Length: 222
Image (cartoon, rainbow, N blue to C red; front, top):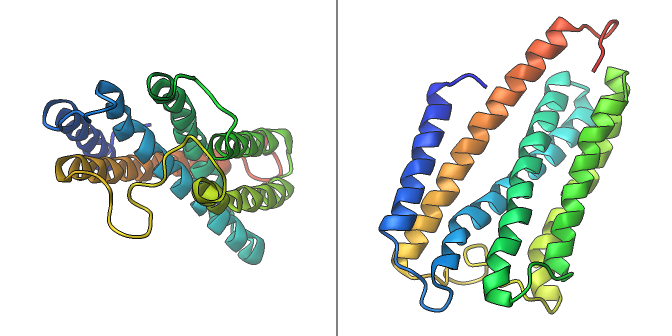
């Protein structure tokens, strides 16, 4: 992806986030240094859900309007979402081992998040397996919508089931449950990761446009 003012701003925001996280944000009293993973794990989860939410929205609109731009947005957002979900699934066990004493447990939130990752991995595989552009877009839209429907259950799973995973810090009823300095750093991480998501989405969408323009539907070979 070519560097753009947006991508440069995103990288700068990420750098500022981690300078603040490591040098100007206090350690959590019980978890110690392991708690710093919060500033990577939580914003990655937010961006993953944002990306897959956009996949669902763009997919619904594609099935209605049949506009290829919407299919490209869904495709691009799904790939970025899988990347951030992978970060969530890697950083979760790295955080969980010193705190919970185990790399992985098959509780509801972790299992549903892994299932979501498989759905969108399948979405990407599906797009590579179907040659007809219209058929590929239609099948992908249906799968993208089904995957998006899982996101509310993942968010509510910590309330519905007994789980080791802590309840949401920000997206919950009532005020955030973090000290002010940690909350400011976490909010900064959410903002910088959202900016990075927009930059990646824009770059991936431009690639999709160039690819589709170079391969008209009659000769298109994904």
